[in-house]
Length: 282
Image (cartoon, helix red, strand yellow):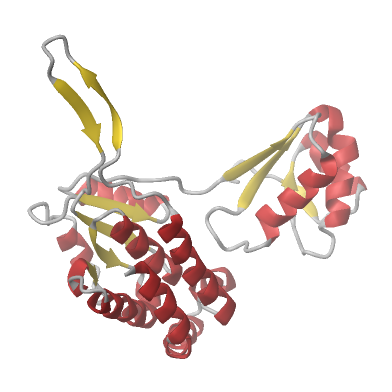
């Protein structure tokens, strides 16, 4: 099924991109920020990347049935912990159409059914992506409704999903702290939450400074709108005067604005960086 999903993403690209364009147009009309619109946007290149990610999931080892640990008791009783599917997972996420395919493919790989609820900003994109997945499941002889989506933007449907403990075994919110808190407060289903960003990189004195510059460039500028973009850079004091000017020079064409205090602020100013003093709120 996963290989068919990857193929269909490629073959149905014109239709998927046309539906995504509707979401982008509505986002612009509603005054969404450039960063949010970038999260929403699908391109031929990004869609190919999503298809390739599905193929990567195929290459992963099958976790179902894997023995984690175990042993034999003195009585001769053998006890093992074995990986099994959770069953039905509910995933609530924000305006990221790629997450629709990411989560669907991972759930299928692990033997789980999934109910997806994306942000209202991705309504058209999610509808067509779910159609692609469900058609692929049918072609593979699997139940098409093993992957479902709530595409109605009515927020009340999210609250109802969080109470379906008779049918849903786990809720996984993927988004900011507000979404995580909403799920924890209102769900009668176990909730697994992840990180909310604020990604750090530390450059210490033994680091290869040229490599560090390229790592920081990639982490910060490749796609600034994502939640795993570098936000905090820590540099060991002993190399700050040497390293920070290198970084400023390398990123000079990337329109990066720095926020710093004390020693780092002075070094960045002397290096000609676009820098302001960091505030307590930041």
